[in-house]
Image 1 (cartoon, protein in one colour):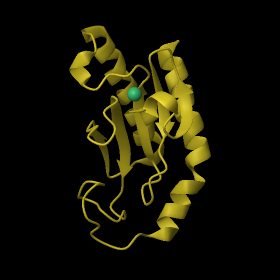
Image 2 (cartoon, protein in one colour):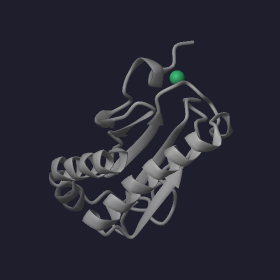
Image 3 (cartoon, protein in one colour):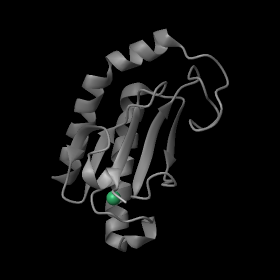
Image 4 (cartoon, helix red, strand yellow):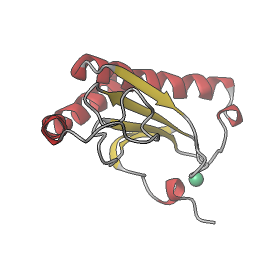
Length: 142
Ligand SMILES: [Zn+2]
């Protein structure tokens, strides 16, 4: 019955606010994979008040914009599924034409081999990217 997003951050913690946090997930093949996690345990987006929903989506937009500015990905994918962990979280995923699944969803079957050189190059940028996401969120919440 224990919820992993109630007991743990759910990934590498990038930023934590009073109502939500941003983590970077460790998903093989998709280095620039972030999640906006609502801190309180709610299952569905409509469990939030209108003001909370706006707050949540503003945070998603800040993360998306930061990934766009610093990575120039082919596409940003936003998703809220929660079938495996029914604790509200939004996936914010930078996608690239070279990734193993593009243009299919990251949860679909792979379309090609992983490109370790491209992945390594992106991984090398993650510490700076995390710092940029953290800075953007701090300015947003200030
Ligand atoms: Zn939970």
